[in-house]
Image (cartoon, helix red, strand yellow):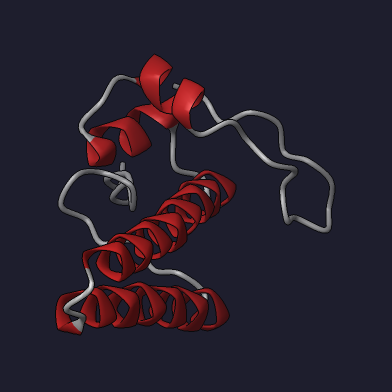
Length: 112
């Protein structure tokens, strides 16, 4: 009997995003980094706070979308929670699901 294929969502096994999702992720992370750089370069503390807050907003939205992409791709809440260093229940509360991007209908809530 052949061995079962490796679980692509197991710790230490890299997950691959679609090229379009990877490009969006890179763009959003670059935007956050640019905002942080602007905050570092200003001498006005209020402007630094604005730049930091804007960067955090971008990172928070990107983090939420990445959680959804992982779940849409078959990752479990437990796997996502491990990556976030929290519990499955904590991850579910912090990152409520949006409607799936799947065109074949909503696959339902991923398992724990």
